[in-house]
Picture 1 (cartoon, rainbow, N blue to C red):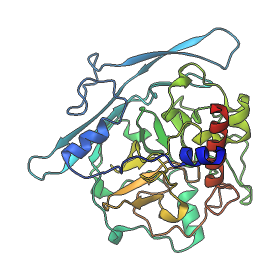
Picture 2 (picture 1 turned 180 degrees about the vertical axis):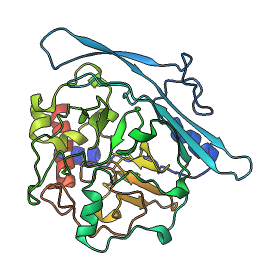
Picture 3 (picture 1 turned 135 degrees about the vertical axis):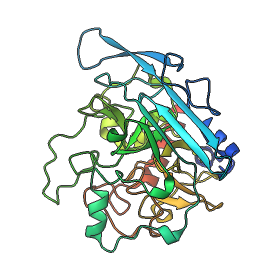
Picture 4 (picture 1 turned 60 degrees about the horizontal axis):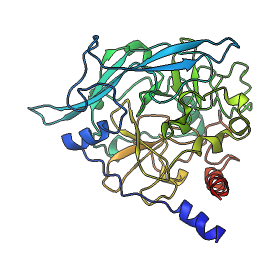
Length: 358
């Protein structure tokens, strides 16, 4: 009986997530975001007092004093269509503060981000990025500037904070920033490897949502956050090191609140969807399904990225990349060929959830 219930839990499925390129498709994706503005998804919001926001009260857990900070969340994702060319565009406006949870440490600062890009543009393997050696792949995957340059065909237009978007992979549906897999230390901040002789004495301090505040007081994620699908962290977030489950097994913690559904989790800086690490029937998207940039072509031949708990977590480059991924990043112990297996962790998490239920 227990095995049957576990199989039912693991076999949860959803309808296939269709991602086209029409204006209605763009509207559907924009509605996946926890917008605070009233104009979404059909118009952007002006950066004035009329930009509707949500205020959250969050404790500053760095001190033992009863301190709190008022977090003002602003998020507006909208779509438009060029009357002449028919090209659909998505505009993303956020102050970088995620809606729905607090922070396990320093209260972050607002960061005005506003960009517009061609939505879900069709790409072909003719434009695929090819790495000729593992060293060449390392130079890209293990650089904190791996996502600085966006392909010109995306027609990216930055309205605000262009100089601070170099390390951004995309924006999550809660308005939080999804960062490039490598911060300035040139190592996977979760599972660093020391084989390259690099100094890793200043790793970021992650909270239980697996986010961190950088030296510019900007909050962001790298690994898939368990708080994207769970709103109970609004006042409970704390340092990952102070949470036994998070500190002992951060990879399984990443998956704890994730539904086995193919769903939108964000939008990349190149206009392509960032989705959950599951196919529509609930099976896990394996490393062999992904190219060297961290994306893949869906059945409708639309290109998407996955956000997961395996390096590079979201993407190493703006794809498509050569298929499949054949090189391993030497700056991480948490790669597809590493000793950490996501599928095993997922089964253990499902079993734990089942035990809790009974």
